[in-house]
Amino acid sequence: MQNKEIVFKNYLDSKGLKFTPERSLILDAVFSMNGHFDVEKVHDKLRKKNKTISAATIYRSLPYLIDSGLIREVLRCENRPQYEVNMGKPHHDHLVCLNCGRVFEFRDDDIEKLQNKICEKFHFKPVEHRLGIRGYCMDCLKKLKDSNS
Amino acid sequence: MQNKEIVFKNYLDSKGLKFTPERSLILDAVFSMNGHFDVEKVHDKLRKKNKTISAATIYRSLPYLIDSGLIREVLRCENRPQYEVNMGKPHHDHLVCLNCGRVFEFRDDDIEKLQNKICEKFHFKPVEHRLGIRGYCMDCLKKLKDSNS
DNA sequence: CTCGATGCAAACAGTTTGCACGATT
DNA sequence: AATCGTGCAAACTGTTTGCATCGAG
Image (tube, rainbow over all chains, first blue to last red; front, side, top):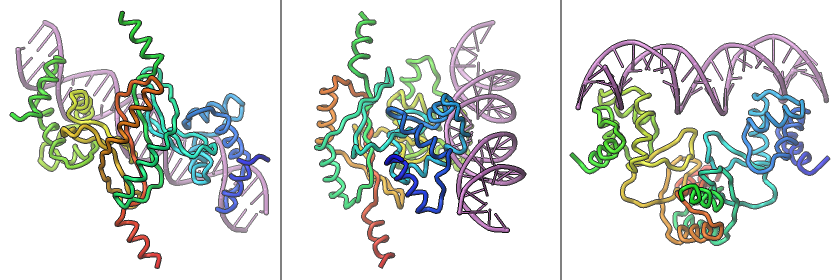
């Protein structure tokens, strides 16, 4: 039993909920994802392992995973909510390419500090923040330039 | 004919589209809104003026308003997309209170500069960015504290 | 026996689209 | 006549919910 299972089980126990086989599979699927994912991707992943679980169950499980701190919702750059695993990384922000859709992660302590300064100014107690910069990545810029010449 | 109408008309003309009475009403409704709004709010506003316009038409018009630069989509803090009028203010970010839902706007040039620095590092050409900090505002903090004592 | 968990299907909300009709040129 | 815009209703997508059933304690 790995760390993530222990965390999830403890969380569920504390709420009088059960660590079922389905929830275990969803947990594994979510952690086998690299990068961002949405409900459909989790569903697909499970189907590929011939462990189909109804979408309703996934929808019902995600809030528990979020509440337990194992995953979190990230910047909405598409039409549906995206999630990602909380891997010890305290926080990071995103560069989203409008052309290829790739997401580049970065973390900048100075930005974090400035944000805290602003919160102080407003007497605002921050819980979380999301910063997403959308634009064009190096590769796509090059491609676009080439195709125009 | 005011500025916004001229801008919109010019935009529509340039695309071979028409500045219809419906689009004019939507434009007015949108500009009479203070703060953020969504499609339903525009619809309501128009209904209150006894100028009911079908939701479909509003949905079809918003992209033109965005594309013409008159309004923009803002941070999604709720379940549906929110928009706001582009009032000359070049850009600002948001503090969203998780308790009362109020949105505080701010602008910080240092953060903007840092973002540009990061983009340079990634050879990333930014188009737009959204920063939302969620937490608790001063008033709610006070209220929450009082009710706990 | 009692709860919570599940899958299914139906319901739902927001958005988009097909279509017939209307207005403008 | 051609083109674009509109309202309506139907379609569609992602998500939630009611219900019968299952399964662990």
